[in-house]
Length: 455
Image (cartoon, rainbow, N blue to C red):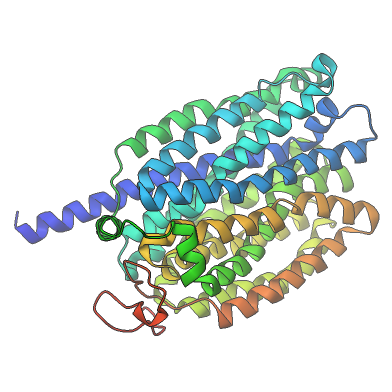
């Protein structure tokens, strides 16, 4: 085998290892987070039994959303580790914390056993979950797309998007399994706990894959360069000095991604069960079928992204979400088939927006500050728009109607369109090391950072 062929083989092997390691973390994160949304009605009964059913549900979602304030904190901590020590180290720690905190939720005694300590411990577990999530998804995109050549970023990043979907599907299917093999009393007593405890073996698998991981060559170059600058600012401070506009652009896009995503996995089951009269099994079944239909379509769309300018791809997704939001919420109330169509199309439109976010975390920021510069706006967007989505949607639906939620999503989609048109860059390589002088940001080959669509 020639030296060139050997180098190509090693490069492909590194990309495969990075993709597997990044994907397993995304799967675990969304498996864990989706379970809380699916079992929100059950959790509200066990941890907030002394208030009305609607108030208990709102309290459950308040814990759900309140914990999201820890995601930006996690982004600061894990972003610093990822930029200064390595992407691998940060992702190893985050996957362990995520799995343990999720498993602990499944082991907590309820209000009947320990009183007010039950919701307090639930909140503590959720805070730890959210803290670890702050170092997970954006850093996994950094890891995988940083390893990838520009023309292959859609293809490689597509597996990260699909892993998010598979995490949700795994949560749905395991929840359905427990629903089918337990009585109502058994489900309330212990059945709902089993899916949360499954996070432990998943976390061990994620840790195993990440121990074997290598950081990208471009990160190693950046690390070697900044090692010779002992007085350099921390990565986050350096990011705020050099790329504040780019951080705001990413925040604007994540607002739409996180809102649409957590309306889907954090609220839609509640909408079907609490407000549309479905039983839990039927609601989860509709969502599962929608995901299973949507996964191959999303994979194809994300791989196709390599053949389009980033702006065109992002704008098309945001416009599609704007146009589909009102019909989707109307269809949800038209029976199981209508609900299935609504959720399937929502999934096919929404999940490719995650790939745009993955492109942006790499193509907006220089390598040496990439994890910190992307992680903070990424997780702030999730904290503000994603964390509040189930609570606001439940309150709006109970106070007005589900269509008021649709108008809210549509308004944020309008903002997403503007961000896509004026903010999202086309495919490009960023500088290895950031500088205060923006003109110092250059392509690796010396060209300035003009938008260059991928052919």
